[in-house]
Each structure stands twice: as C-alpha cells, then as structure tokens.
Image (cartoon, rainbow, N blue to C red; front, side, top):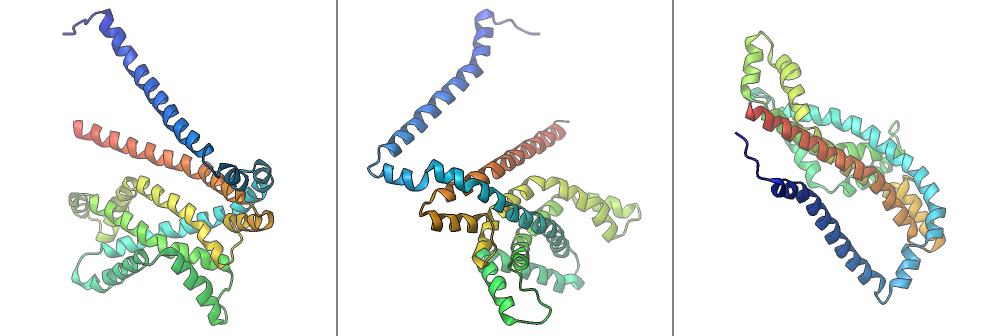
Length: 279
C-alpha cells in the first residue's frame, strides 16, 4: 500500500537532485576559481605564462604534433594486438595444472616477475640500444621495431596477470561440467573458461591500455620520432615550453574518453552482477 506524503514532500523529493547538482557546481567554481586566482597572482606568473601558455606557439606547434601522434597510434595498435595474444598465452601457461607442467609454469612466472619488476624505460633502452649494438646479421636495427618489442614484453607481463585473475574467477564447476560433456581439458579451457574470463577482464584491460598509450612516448629516447620527440624539437627551436602543453592536450583528448568508457563498462558489469545476485 502506497502512502501519499503530500505535495510538499513530493516537491522536496524533486528538488533534492537539482539542489545537489547546484551545490556541486558552485563548490567546483569556488575551488577552481581560488586555484586560478592563486596561480595568476603568483609573482612569476607572467614569465610562466609566456613560457608555457603562448597561444601563437601553441597554434604553430599543434598541427605538427598531432601529425606525429600517428606514430604513437601505430605503436599502440601493433603492440596492443601482440600484448593481447602473448598475455593470454602466458596466463594459460601459468594456469596449467599438474606437476608435469611445473617447468612451464615456472618459466611463465619468471617472465611475469621479471618484466613487472624492471622499469619499462630500462627495457626500452636495453633492447633499443643493446640489440642493434651487437650488429648481428639478419637482426633488425629499426628503433620502431624494438620499441614495439619492448612495449609488448613489458605490458604482456601485466596483462597476463589480468587474464589469470579472470581465469581463476571462473568457478571450477564450469570446467567440471565441460569435462562431463566429453570435452578435453584444452577444449574446456578454450571454449568454456577463457571466453568467460576475457569478458570479465575487459575493464581492467582497458586500464592497462590507457597506460600503454601514454608510455609510447618513452620510445623517443631510442630515436623514434613520435609526438614527444617532435615537441622536444619544437621546444628547442622556439625556446618555449608550450609544445609540451600541446602534447598534453592531445593525450587528454584521447585518454579521457577511453577512461570514461572504462568506467562505464565497469559500472555495467557491476549492475549485471548485482542483478544476477538479486535473482
């Protein structure tokens, strides 16, 4: 039985969300206004504004910087495909049961621990300068090639752990049911466990790839002419740091929508899980 609480209560219920939004907007304006006021009234603000926020330098640098971002996108897309495959292979190898597979599990564990422990910039340096320095016949010397290899090795270690968490989250009864239907262990893993695991780890995978997109700038240190190297060249030529701001704007335009997509997928999965629990 519903109870009518009267027109005042209904009006108050409608005004509640609007009032909360108004308070949030007002508090944000006050906070950012105070921060902005403190910045523009700092003693050295004119010098900082000229060095970092020159609109003419920004307009001159942005087209070239945006064009160079295509190299970062190529790095990201090629490495992402390789990471997805290699990370899944490592996760599956670490999930193999039985003592006979212990050496394989050990090697996969060592790989994961090694490349998660060593900073990515060191891996890029070691591969980008060390391997070409050997001057071995038939081995590529292209910095772009070794940049892809380095990013793939580093991020496959992180992605394999995400995959492994997804595999372990699938209830053992799923494998038992598949085996009872006549599927082999490999078939159960391929057709039952891995598809469920991959669907569950899509949001954390997107988080890793946001980090991958940003870390593509690290390959500039081995000679790949991408967005960060171009901004460095522009800064050296113009004696102004505004090109770095243009680079930051490009990354903001790409990573923020991807971050919001990740949040939306996480919220959707959470709603589906709660709906399943409620049933």
